[in-house]
Amino acid sequence: QVQLVESGGGLVQPGGSLTLSCATSGIIFTFYNMGWYRQAPGKERELVASFTSAGSTNYADSVKGRFTLSKDGDKHTVYLQMNSLKAEDTAVYYCHAEGGVVHTNTYWGQGTQVTVSS
Image (cartoon, rainbow, N blue to C red; front, side, top):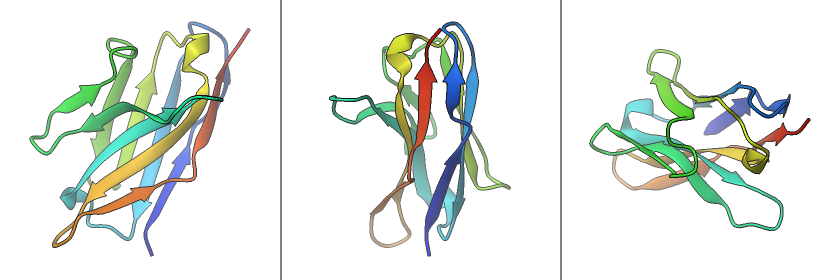
């Protein structure tokens, strides 16, 4: 059974920092491109950051320079370090995995709420 379990969300003041974690199980971690999406109320889900097949990282323009994507292959975990948070970063953040050994599969976590407010 595939599981993507997010943690680390919460309430933070503008300018603050949070680190999201996504612990995976049931997938061969190295065969998947991992990333984070977010969805704010009334808006479509959007890409925040992801690893590409070439091994580089891709960031939304709105988070470049503030967010950092990283992973720990031994722990099968992906992290999103978020600094200088703004009110417009408020959203539910979802872990995303796409890839596979033979067929391409897509998996989502349950989401973790990030609220940036004073």
